[in-house]
Length: 489
Image (cartoon, rainbow, N blue to C red; front, side, top):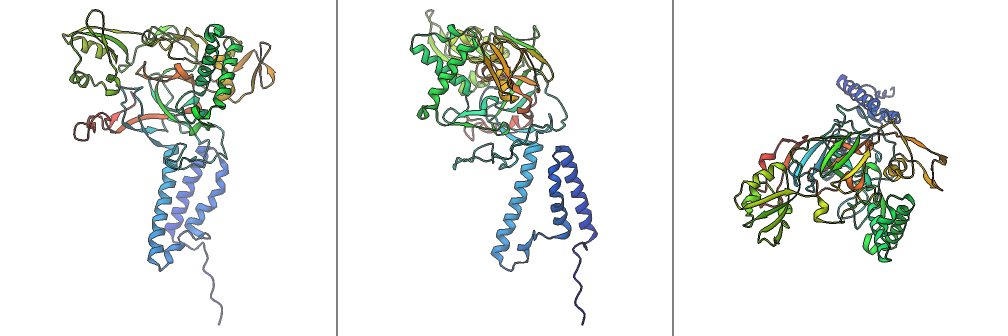
């Protein structure tokens, strides 16, 4: 009696072959789009899943143990969901929640957004081995949600649009490459300068006056601050580093484009010496005088949050009038003036209220620069060459050294890049200038500098949920009027 012939692994129904071909083509097209052809190694795995079955993908389905069947069916569903979410989150859409009031009146604290990564072109991840839906740290267990290696170089796939002026953009926090674990959301270099400056002040030296843009004095201040911070973990925590795509996500409005000259004069923004129109939601602090105290109903009518109004009342002036300081749009200012007990409403500069309390980018460069009077400053553009000097180097040093990964040194007043004397530098990437609409309550490019193109995540396109943290569940907690609101402008 002859032995039974083995069944060929290639003998599968036509529909299995169709599935294998379709998914194989999708996989190949994805690899071409991404441009990482090492992933072709995975093509035999796709083929095996549909046709040859050398790997027992569904071994558990033959089990007669109901517990095994139940558990493995859940594992199978969860693994599939995680893989799907990983690719959707990486290349198509990402959920984002507005955490601060920096874009208040445009996007509110408690807005949940769909962020389109396809708008500006999705980035190939720097850290491909990461857990989906977790930016950098697992909650509770407080460990990294990604594996450091491998790290891939920056590559952006073809998108539908380019970043334009007034676009609201989600991006990775540029100054988040180095982070203090006890001051997680602040600019490390800015903190170092402040700590070093305070150390000199304690010795009777006004470092801001001594520096006045001096590269050597500024670097000395930074160096002293770094040393103090490194040795004071009780105050500042550990110093950690993060890859680009694992830095905190920020959302601001793009107001300056690559290659443009930007300046702020008395709160007004100028591009290439021409004043540009404020966004409708732009707010600045206003000085207000009233004969009566402002009622809560007024705050509600003007949609002013509790965060904005909580410390607004400043007392009574020598004329017996109540004094308030509130962040208001121009429209809010006009509406507030209509109340009969309001005697004066006028915009003021941040420094008029809080003298010397804010450091601008680059830290220690120009003591005269403030958030309301800043620049002029040139925004780098890919392929454009900048004439270098020690005087302007602090503005562009971070872009050259950190963002574009060059070795940069200054010896006896001479600039060296990658050990060669450099009088010019050609930028590899485009850079953007981002600002919040809540101009006096926004840590943005005025504080920590340019946003490189490789940090751009995507464009918010839709508010899918909005929760008011100032209200109870049955008193306006859910802002139904914001559901499905266009978040792009």
